[in-house]
Image 1 (cartoon, rainbow, N blue to C red):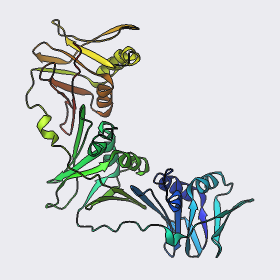
Image 2 (image 1 turned 60 degrees about the horizontal axis):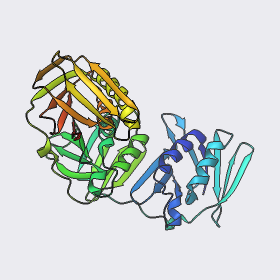
Image 3 (image 1 turned 180 degrees about the vertical axis):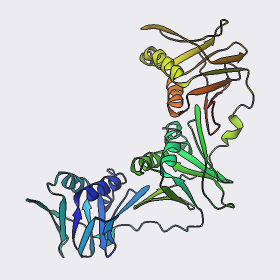
Length: 379
């Protein structure tokens, strides 16, 4: 194999695929990045058997040179070393040559590295998916939907299914749901898909979703999503992102969302967030991170936190509107902060059904987003 490739394009591609390289694998070849060249260009592949990422560098794109293939072939190079080399090479052009004994010479400017490669024929094949369930989402929308929900997935392996983000599609409405059984985050959007396409209980590991956000562009270009039995594939420009799906049945979360409410408060998202952040300065130190919200007779909302060893904080909030019964409720400040940071609307409405019932936070200007938080017993 012998190629000359543009350094910046190679560096970007290597940083994308490196996200799928496992540091804790017992299979030595999976510590490497597979480099394959043919008459269409250069393809880099990495996999940790949960996530696989493939990035293509075409010969040229939009009139800009990418790679010249002098002799097609393939090699697997240790990811850690290869990515460091590519980052630190001096010139804009990189020449990579592999001999019959898999010894790889990497030249750029006055620098030359010689490293030992691994046989690419031993590298596992990427899954081949039946493309009968395919739909499209703009990349920026997909990233936003993941960011606005994925923080709610469970970090505990007690119930593995809850460590994933549940995707469902029905009548063109895509919905993401995350819950760790103490809180729930939900986001929906209308997407382009065949009329008869629907699925539910497609649970993508939270870790995969976080990696996907890092490699997608922030643009309106469409990402095609293929859903198979135990894999999902996201295709965007020259990137293929595969993730395995979690096995099991995701709980029916629609049943826990309260239909009515006894108290409703409408507040500025930013003011509410800042108030909770101030209150959590002390509650965090007190290890409990519990904040208390009380509706006052004068129409204000009092937010307090008390850490016995440190002290207490009281913050008064002026809501835009408030109606219903008086309320005293305590909750985990971190859950509230995560939810408020995920909402991109100026105002939110919080609906409470009593001091010990889950409460719901929604933006006031649309119904695409919903956050549910379980209160904390403090007495």
